[in-house]
Amino acid sequence: MTPTVVLPVIIGGLYAAGVYLLLDRSLTRVLLGFLLLGNATNLLLLSAGGPAGLAPILGYAEPEEISDPLPQALILTAIVITFGIAAFLLAIIYRSWRLVRQEVVEIDEEDRRVALRSGTDADEMDPDDLALEDRPAAHADSLGGDAGGDLAVEGTLARRYSGIASDDVDLPPTERRRR
Image 1 (cartoon, rainbow, N blue to C red):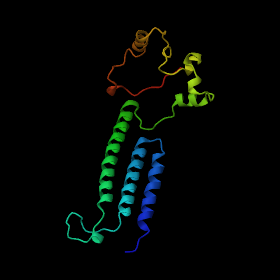
Image 2: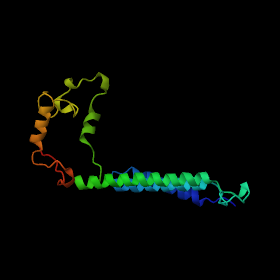
Image 3: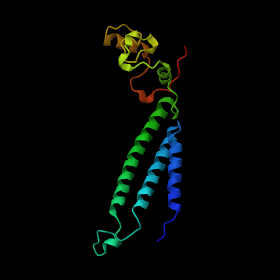
Image 4: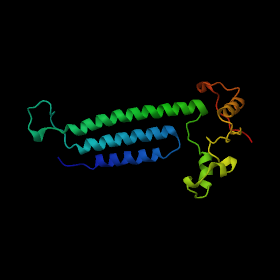
């Protein structure tokens, strides 16, 4: 049996399309890219297994005529892992849609602000020396309260979110704060 060039070209095309879709900000495209990468990997494992042969469990064939069961076991494992991660990504997409009515990952302003900081090592940085807007979110006075502990933080959160239910599943779409 002569090898054909069609299967490697299909595998390469699936990998290329999968990587292209993974680099998008849309979570649905990320999911489709991940599924394409999983299928390309399954085809790669299948083609690496060699030509088809007889089932090894029957026991009446010569060893040269038996197909290798290891690639088939790896493909079954890859299918299960791909299914589990796809279900997880679907849950993330659904949650994102329910909370903000979109499934596109936006640019995080906090990441931009951190990237603009000087190249100071995190071990050398004291949060008390930073400006108030540059302090980490878990810092004691980042919520505007005093450093009196958890009661001040709880009081600030209760004032800020007084009209919002604690169950966030049925929240209306979020609105950006206007300053």
